[in-house]
Length: 526
Image 1 (tube, rainbow, N blue to C red):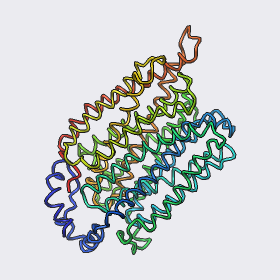
Image 2: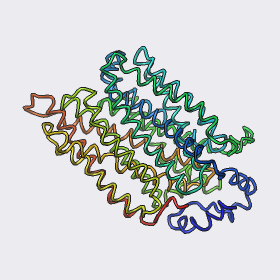
Image 3: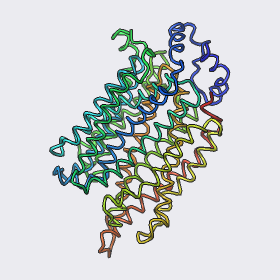
Image 4: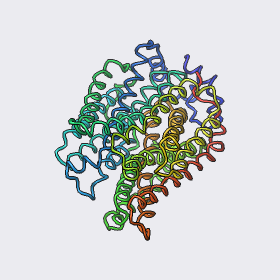
């Protein structure tokens, strides 16, 4: 078949180079080879320009909607907490609980999508996403908002991994798939930034903060209806019995990993809110459970591999240097970029005393850069060596926190802050596309939803742990400062500590890229 021939000719050397799982036809003759043949013939048909556009457009807009909702909440949290009388100890929970819910459910959603119908899972997730975002806008109190954000996190866990498998099932390796991944990469920072900008603008109008949630929620529901017609059907085996579905998933591995991740997300949320809270017995117990289950997961994976049984994420994958390197880089860079987004807003409003609308407009250079960079990455990534590209963009991105760390708040926006905002998304926008190309190449086609879940789990873990760590660092450096009467100086010292930490972390990724990705060469070849 055309796709199998493509695997033999254009990807064989790449798979050997950085250790992708060998899923060429020679190794599948004893398994369901006929089923795979029919499956491949169905997958890679010509969808036409219009349908190709709308497949990528719809999946991108779903991610934009959910990221925009988080951006709306981030910039509007001070005002929202006042309107909903949110207790001080729960101030960050509307943001943190989203990552807690989605991060805990990503792996199970991805595993289920791989053995059922990814299209149906995606539509269900998108509908529930729209309804949960609408519920956020209708919140009468803070507890309702926290519940709605929890539901949004679970919904995103269904839509994110299935977006990856829909792209890989719809398009063969090449430009369309590259553009699809780069568009998904664009959607997350673009949606978040649009949410920041729009939230800052509408907060001071008669419509208030709820308008943004209404628009995002309505848009998500409309996209779910559209996806029923846009996403191709018949690309997944929907004839499996429930018994087959249950037997096709490593449920114990999912239980261990999801529980461990949930404990880490919860502990991160507690740390981000209060450093002293982690010392409480119940919170300390949760953290200890997460730490104990972490090595337990790898021991279970070793046992599953050794006995030839299903393994959720085989330990052998982590022995492949490019996969390990890109996972660590995603973890670090998502921690940095999400923390920078939050502390930009805090710097503008708490130190420079700008209004939410004025602060939101200062994110525009990053939005423009993100759009241009993601489009160009999708079109030209196959022409550049990956290790060179990632190293270069990481160096540029490292300049972003450095510029803000040396910034005097009295300086003009155009002196250093504009360039910092402009360079902030440079690395993650490129790495998003590259990481997906590596991850889906390491996992066999039948596990691409799980591959997307692994990527998003690593990214969200980086975000959650990063925000908690930066909050702790900021608090530690601004708490005890003698002879400081102006609280802005105290805050600025804490923020600068965060920016310097982000700079050091980005420098680490600059050193990792040429070593960890050297064997990859080029990706996304047709």
